[in-house]
Amino acid sequence: MSEFGPPEVLKPAEVPDPAAGPGEALIEVEIANITFVETQLRAGRAPHPSMEPRLPVIPGNGVGGTVGAVGEGVERGLVGTRVITSTGGSGGYAERVAVDAAGVIRVPDGVGLPEAVALLADGRTAMSLMRAAEVRPDETVLVEAAAGGVGSLLVQLAAGAGARVVAAAGGERKLRVARELGADETVDYTEPSWTEKVGDGVDVVFDGVGGAVGRAAFELVRSGGRFCAFGLASGAFTDIPDADAARRNVTVVRGTRVDPEELRQLSRAALAEAETGRLRPVIGQTFPLERAADAHQAIEARATVGKTLLLARPR
Image (cartoon, rainbow, N blue to C red; front, side, top):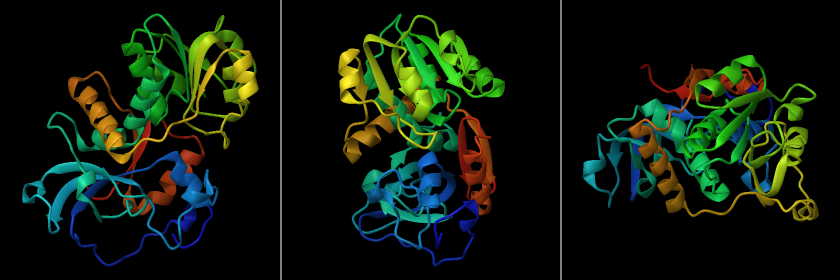
């Protein structure tokens, strides 16, 4: 990517192969992760100026594959193992990438590589949100963007915690996915009166949409409840002034700083849940690596369900 703009700025290109330097592992990439934020970075609309990449850049902050080589100071036994890893912010939309070996996570035998990649970022986000919200049995939880990568995991985790889950999404196709994942009720937030169908309020909101939808969801939270923002599918995070939250006695969770090792532990926890069958990532669509632009276009058109992945090698 040499310029910001529409999906078409993502262009396939041949570049020199990376090599594993000291402390690094070379990953033969099979699956590259895509997040909604990456579509914003490509468009030149970074959520925060510090996130804007320096051009030219190979996008992508998460991959899964096999360790092909390791550099000096890295355990040789890592070669040949299936792993997932963050890339440090860029380089993921590629057939090979060199990463800090300390950051690779071995994939359990009982988990497929596509599923593991789907849980790398979205899994740790969902696990972190559940921890922050402290969802209790018999509480009512509203999950927005419930058929998305993070939302579909939150539906399962909240249901597994014994909560009554109300899933909000746009369109019957996505609502059907949420019901299959364990949602007790579903509402279409593209309908003007959608909040009236939620009932007499909720204890927890997981806000993956932001904007007007997020604000409407905030008004549903009961006194003592929690409002946890994790996405901005609408283009902007929900604006909740501190005074409004205090007046309604609602705790607003806007995200907390987590160190890299804690992030890896959250991803491992998501993988462990998947290995036991308690957590199933929804992989709605895959695209060949050279069609990364098409993948971004589908995400921005809200034509996707669950997780979207790039296939770096034929499977």
